[in-house]
Image 1: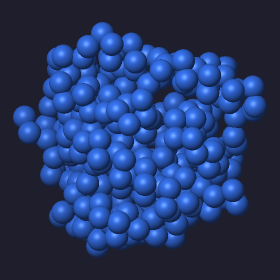
Image 2: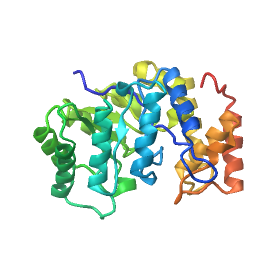
Image 3: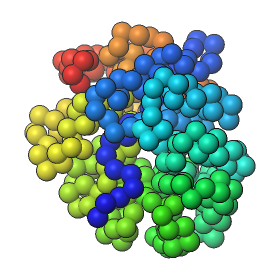
Amino acid sequence: MTHAITGLWPALATAFTAGGAVDTARTLAQARRMLAAGSDGITPFGTTGEGPALTVAERQALLEALLADGVRPDQLIVCTTACALGDAITLGRHAIALGCTRQLYMPAFYFNHPRDAGVVDAVSQMVRGIGSDALRVLLYQFPSLSNVGFSHAAIATLADAHPGVVVGIKDSTGDRAHSLALVKAFPQLGTLVGAELDVAPVMLQGGAGSVNGLANLAPHLMRRVVSRPAEVSAADLALMQGLLALLGVRPDMPFVSAYKTALAEQTGDDAWLHVRAPLSPLEPAEAQAVRAAYRALGQDFATL
């Protein structure tokens, strides 16, 4: 079955200045690197990109900058997740007006465990509020972070209510069995996996691809995995495991801060260490451990 959104879409990291402003130039350079490595597109403003910590105006400005820098609208999945439903609609309308029809949406996440009816209503209000038949929505499933999940019943209701608009699920549960169950239950929807080690196994059963954070460090590696899921080499599997182990070299590290520390080591650019509050940079001992573990992998930045 052909799905509306397929392939590799790195969850683009957002660079910040020392003063906390969006560092547009570095973020654009990172986007260019992802596309040059063969990514089908990029996904700005997701969890790895610290999207919920950006204002509506910041997200609109950065989206416009990406397009002005040469990223095509069809190379973007714009994450519109926001605490206020009206902000998500504003972001969605802005993206649609710029030709960005692919959008990723997690319902408002500040109420603990809303019922299916509320989750369905949030997505439906968002779809109606944007009001475009061109809209293509991925449901963002990340309950360990957001406390909001999409049950199979909610997904079925939304797919039936918005055919051709709700086109897939971005599954960040990190649970391979859950991802495979989505593929089986909703073959008409594209399931894009966030857990890098699950990408190939899920694609072999009908998954549509991946939106993931590791591609910020290893876009060529993740391109190989997505392009040839049946032929992932032992070396590439070990490399994925080694890179993902960077996130856990010390307990309880914020994964975005760990990714950015590895990115700073990889690029030689410590400006990547900056994160937006409430996140904070790693403690010196944590950062040293991540950097040492990355160096031990012995990888070439240009080909990783």
